[in-house]
Amino acid sequence: MTGRSILGLSEAAKHWHSWCEVERKPTEDEADGQIFHFSDIGYFDTERAAHDRAIAWAKAWIEENF
Image (tube, rainbow, N blue to C red):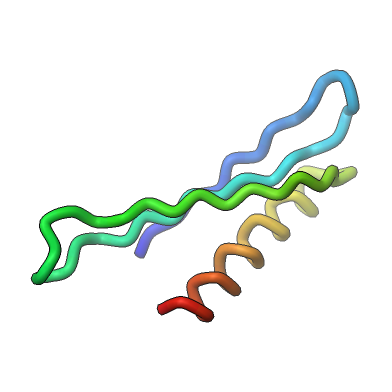
């Protein structure tokens, strides 16, 4: 699995939103892989806090489901 996080700054609110994409490569039985998107409706005061939240959420979901 590979992953990346995209962080967006809301100019009006001056808060960061977290978003993360995780790509699961195809297995031998599958023709295509899967892409999962995680986002948080919360607001974060710093870029680092938003980044940490996106990664933590994606890791928790992966551990629960794979």
